[in-house]
Image (cartoon, rainbow, N blue to C red):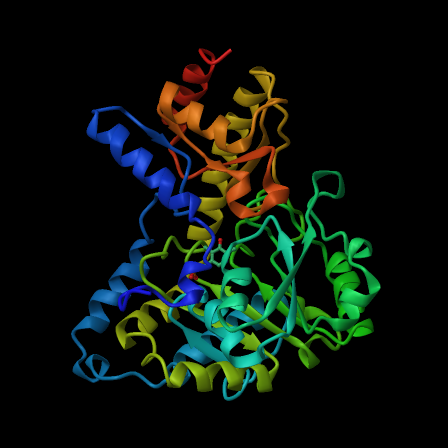
Length: 389
Ligand SMILES: *Cc1c(COP(=O)(O)O)cnc(C)c1O
């Protein structure tokens, strides 16, 4: 074997579909095509001004230029605690139950190093954000997937998990509001998952990246930690990325069970040096500031969703308006694969969507439209799609 060949874990990575799509996109752009890109889960609007100003002010403070505290500044953790108290009614101890992260992906991806031994089994939704399964396998953990299916509103089909598998498993990953399906869980749905976790003695890993991106809900999506007893077994990941259009800034939190939070913190202490203090000041401004900017983004996504749903339905596609997230999970016409359909949209119409199969085999039959495109472009995309027949 060649000296420079990558480690087995690199070779075992599934082919990254998104990279193939990026190549196709680059080629189309190089040909001068006008692409309408529904492919990326990255807010198109800028970060709100008051957050940008906080960053500018903080940038001039030399004490923030040095290595930050590993867990994040106390002020930043207190801001997260205040946010959780106000938003979810959940009281968190900033001294043990909150860890600042370099974006929630930092915490999600490093968590297996902290809690997963070789051979440990994780229950992972399918379709899902690919990081849960990939990083579990990085540390020699095993993955059993359970389906999130449209006829169950993309809630976990826990009864389908064989008893012996559930008994063997150590943890379950949960992500509501859900990427890529747009599914939402009410508190009673989370209660059912917690009861399952309790019955089988599982840790619960909750990814709450989209909690504020609810579009129709009378009651905003809950945190797992609202449930009685959740703190015994749950770690939850909160992200500022989607809520405040801050994906590039890299800041989020792990909250919940103190032992889990501490273990993750220990791993990170050995791998990175925390979130830039200036960015932490911006995060404080976001969490403590006026939340009307978030409501305004919800209104933007709602308008885009309604426009796209109406357009796609008129084209005869099967789609239901999602109640949260900025993703529309759309069934592809019968007899087409999600990859073929996405390929056709790109090649023939210059429209970029993400094939559902990129999120797992049960995502086959769907493509994901990300509503991070202005309404005029959405209307244009629908016009183009009329040509597809
Ligand atoms: C965007 C996203 C994240 C990661 O967000 P960060 O920018 O790393 O905070 C985590 N989970 C899901 C499901 C996401 O879509």
